[in-house]
Length: 255
Image (cartoon, rainbow, N blue to C red):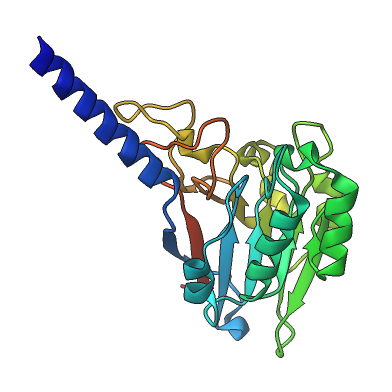
């Protein structure tokens, strides 16, 4: 009986260590997406996408890896949560800014800290907040890519209609929303080609492959293509199983 107990204890300890390892991975997932209408004059666009940082400090290894590879950085919400010092948030933003210019959308946990302080910090670091608005990128040939961002859906603050007004009609449109469920508000006539989201943590802890949410990945839908990240941090407990921590290097090109 004692032997079985010891074996179970060892198995449990091994599983716990594995779950900690999955939670604190510094994995960069490469995603290459080709679109027939991507503006060829851009060549390709490389996006470093990170979501759901929560309590973590971004690893210097990731920063070193991504520098020189990305044209822009997108933070998909939940940069922080209750109890995270603003100084840690500042350190993370300063690190990510070493990669490329940063664009940010709000997540539900970001409102658990002083949102005015966070907004002020973003302004000081010249970080663009996509709060129901769009930013238009233009190539030398005059082609455009619109980055649209909506505010937090859980508080009914998202206004996709306002973000669309800031985008040029003929541009290649990329929408960033913390919540993947934004896809339910996208219509074919919006012309949104790609959606980047987080929030779900890929289920965070998946038992025999099952979890409260789908594991992160890419889905080609009728109205758009959706990329959902497992996220970089964790919430509630610092453990993961079957949905390892990740951030992304996304290459967009014509094809």
